Length: 65
Image (cartoon, rainbow, N blue to C red; front, side):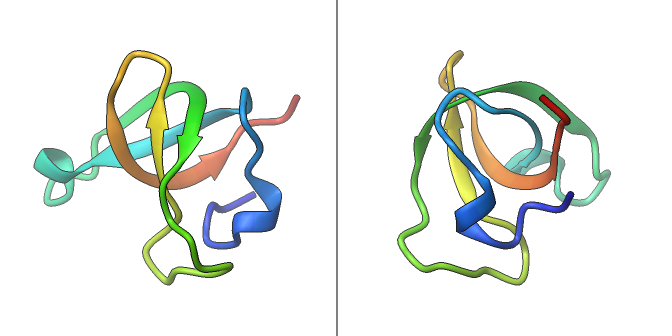
């Protein structure tokens, strides 16, 4: 599932995000959601989140629980 809709992202979910510095390469970082930073219900590039390790990026994929 992609990360463009906020309603599918919950605190503690395992997701893969793309960090700002990796947007050109598309390298993904995997982690658990600590905070949801995007306030709108939809974003074309993905909802911005903070992971447990402090990394901030846009969700590209939500892992199956």
